Length: 287
Image 1 (cartoon, helix red, strand yellow):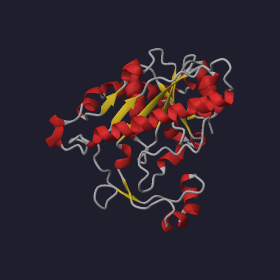
Image 2 (cartoon, helix red, strand yellow):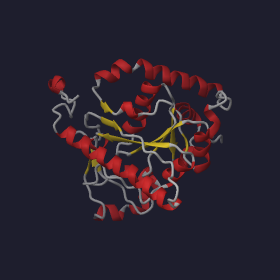
Image 3 (cartoon, helix red, strand yellow):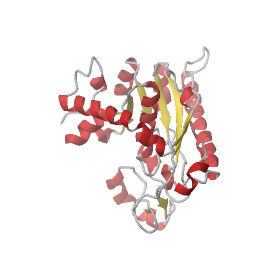
Image 4 (spheres, helix red, strand yellow):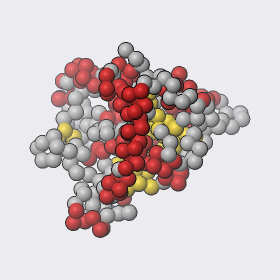
């Protein structure tokens, strides 16, 4: 089975099959054509001016329980602003995906997020996106909306420092409200389902969240999305600072910036009468 490789998008696309090349062109042609439709959805987005024009930066974001808005909207708006293709660093299980799904993911820019792959992409000055919490960030239980579960992970900071890459925190609010969590972490249900949960979602020590969508159904609840790109964080280590201390500092600054942006966006959303996409509130939507 073919694996995702770091060089799949370079020199120029020499390692891509013709089908992947065709899919890549189609995906970005569709994305460009969807601009008017996206504008009609009134997605709140700010901070685009913070994106370094050279595209040489690492986006660090929060996963939501729905798992989809952030992986679609972040690359979309970066591409719309700078015209670059964002390479998403995904879990190792991505390398086991086969068939058309593999080709679509590769065409969209996804790669297995190991250190070697990310380092090669940084040497090529690519624009990267990572969610340090991985699958744990998506497994939200009642009361955990928009909380980061990074479990002390700082590999992204170490990588950015090694390649003098700026980090751009990017927060998305709305995705954790598409479904409502019904059980708490540590509840009887959560503890009882940890073994089977590990087999299903691959995260150890975490059970299966129970959630509902619109009413008692699994239909997603209509929610407006709020996206913010933060100020770039310089990762160049000052003289005299221990590498380990600097890595911890960079990681903490990125996490704090992201948590602050999430809190700010939730406050913004609280006063938005259009947050549930009520068409009668369209003209009063927070800009």
